[in-house]
Length: 272
Image 1: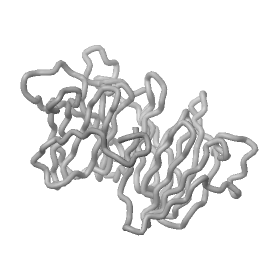
Image 2: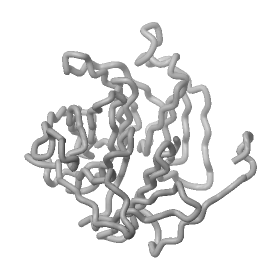
Image 3: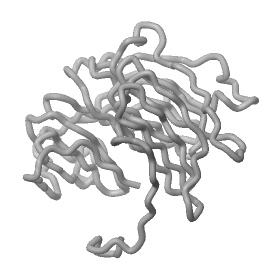
């Protein structure tokens, strides 16, 4: 786009055999894209966009349609989540002449094997924590996740799962920003927890906007963006929020901008 976002300067078309997509993930630094089809048992495809013609690097067949897929910060690993689905997927490997079948491993073990995972987030540390949110209201913490498919990885055979019961009803959206974890759900309230250095969580505040189902969050350097099922999009200055400023009051926080799309509900936003 141009600077005013009124004209497309360049575009790249990626032809596929899919009849729609359930999830996409994009890493602009590494020029990697993940596309997942809309079938009941779709293929996850890993693409390299650094060439004139995008190259299909690898694929993996999923057993159910997912709700979310994300890369970690250096694009060495992907995570895909859905109903009874939480997998780490290999994305870091020597490029071959034809697409390879990607390796994957399940991490929805113990009591969460059949949980419905609705959203994902990595922390921003060099060896990040992985957060996986269930619709039933549990935040699953996997500390210090590294690439389990690397030959030298200490996590090749084991992971640590710490479940946190949130007791906030049915949940739908998750985001992380410098150890502040945002989450929300069917009631529309945005809650925040702070992950402390001692490994404990504390309540960081809440925001009440509209009583509609929360679809997704996005965070930039200065703003928190929340999108609701009825089309409302709210932008708050982070400096006005109680999670970032001790003097801010959660009940009196007004959004910097309120956009309402009358064309229908919003499914997802992607920013990078």
